[in-house]
Amino acid sequence: MTATRRRTLLLAAAPVLALLLAAYAAWWQVLAERWRTGVERWTGAQAKSGWTISTGAVSVGGFPGRVRLVLPAPKAADADGDFWEGPPLAIIVSPFAPLDPRIEAPGTHLLALAGREPAALAAGTLDGSVVVAHGAPDSLELSGTSLAAAGVAAASARIELRRLPPDAAQPNLGSLGINLEIGQLALPEGLSLPLDRTVSLAHLAARLTGVLSPEGAMPSPKAWRDAGGVLDIESLTLDWPPLVAAGNATLALDRAMQPELAGSFTLRGGAAAIDRMGEAGTIKPAAAVVAKLALGLASKKAADGTKEATLAVTIQNRILSVGPVPLLQLPEVKW
View 1 (cartoon, one colour):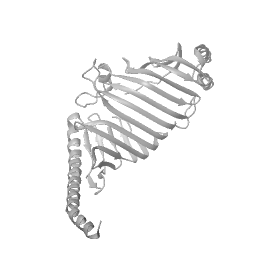
View 2: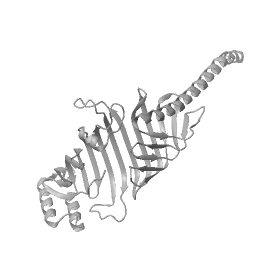
View 3: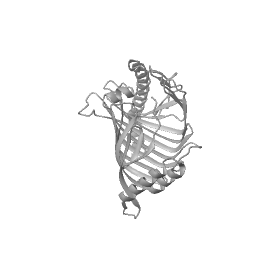
View 4: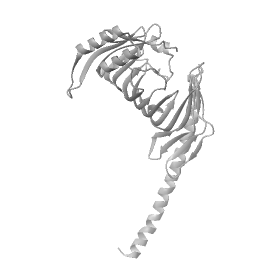
């Protein structure tokens, strides 16, 4: 191709390129404005559900790359007095995926239930993504590192929440899919624990039925219980040395608003855990003997040669039982 022909083609393409750049710039501005006004409309609409939400003066930047909206002082409170106050929060939107925003909110978050002192959650990093469908959030994923709150610290954590179709038996109650994973969870100093102070890994996959009404309102624990709300734990894996447990269960609230649970778990390291409970005085010597006997009868060798036992695990009237043996009296949950 001759130099003259190349110049001719470049001159011919220049108007097209200029038109495409102008169209992209216009689209970027429209997208940024729609997200800015959309945030304002959404926060205002939450008042119908009893929520008061403020963000501070939202700023917009990032051109020509991703749209970046910064909410400098986000706060949310419900009519009961529960509230959350966060550090500056950024909403990041790609012009090529306008309905899949990302969230960044590292720093200190304050959370409080009505009538209780606020708790601070510090996060070295806190990133999230939202999938929007039909004008409302359909799923949310959050992940963080170097997390600390109330003397508890975690090297990493990730939670995914997904709105699920209502259960056919309870069409008036929405369902939420939950996937939670926590790595290297260090419990507070000074606790008298029969297990290690650090939980190596905890993973939960569950379905929470009755968490949201079709209008998006969050019921109280009592209303949730009265409507038949349950947490179906589809799988739970816990590596808490010396104990490793894996299984499934169903969790609900009893008449006294206390957790009740019924499930089946495969346990490894159970004998060592019982020994520690006995040494710490968590369970009585006689109960420890019975528990180890029941565990031994139920144990078998796994493929790797390790002994494991599959047992029923229940919580009823605040008593945790493994198999037929009651192990612990649990503290009362105060709502």
